[in-house]
Length: 488
Ligand code: SF4
Image (cartoon, rainbow, N blue to C red):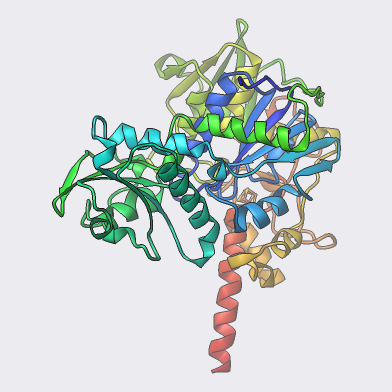
């Protein structure tokens, strides 16, 4: 059945990375594909390790009905604890302020992942007879990922019993038996197709598993730094080995995301075309304005964007006409380093974006500075809800659970250093150390404006980001080490 258009927002949640774009890229691309089909009033992404965070993304959402789909491979710690906590969800359906939030199952457990696995296998092993092929689906393994093991075993069963014609279908893992490194002992067919059951071509599927398979002798560069995926087949141990990229990077993945929404509607009795309204959109300045390091100029019904320092050089800049170009520009700095913090003062120069509509402009600005227009809107309407640092650190779990043991003085110094406007981040901080403890270290450029700024949309920080939480954890850890050394 075709997917009916919805007057609702879709938020895809990904893990993200502070090291390279490989983790977030598939989530962003699937969102692009769904957005282009016009199936939702708005489509957003949010990440654990990148911007916008799961707390921030709601400032960008206008619709009062919101579907959240975790772009994760399995249920487990993230989907059952971290995501509901960060998204402030109380169950599958949450009423929050004026919004209804529907929390769908993660994509990886949907039965339609089967067709993606088959698609991946057929792509890398074209014209290889299935009845002479062992298909191995690979996951991470270890007790921390029990649910991912179950998702893989479910797929092994579905494909083995579904009459797809493979000689055999097996599961294997990086860190527990059956080990993927023993693939040649496990597989009895002359051809072996290995499909990593991961969302992205990150460290595990692109760099670790090829070493375990013996395709590479040592860890290679990340996927984003390689021009082509690996050549197939690899003739090894008397067999032909075909290795595919991660299942989550498949072009069919947007269909699985939509299937999760459809299943959610069915399970909870929600009408596919349920009406929904949305918050009004505040107008953008009608004359030239700046946002972060960008100059925006309305001209002849279009919008021109360039780096502030490229003023007067518009004739010499590389021109692009699509909002998605903004995301590519914002991804790396001039030296080719991944810009994990999009509000870092490191936006590269030498480009000119010409956009035809205000909708395109808003999308491009959201790619440059995720959720920034939403923060500004809420700030002006008095509905921004800053979260103080102690509260952000206090709700952390897992490896970050000690972050809140950082001392007050250390926290003040950390903010001064890690949030410095000249070297680290252009956002103006709206939160305090705690309800009754202001931050005493902020320079004027880090404070939110107190008067209207008609020619500037300021970048605002509504709560400490993942980088600051990580720093707090490191400092807290060093306190523990120093204390135990003193005790010894
Ligand atoms: S916590 Fe600091 S570095 Fe992180 S987004 Fe806010 S101002 Fe920027």
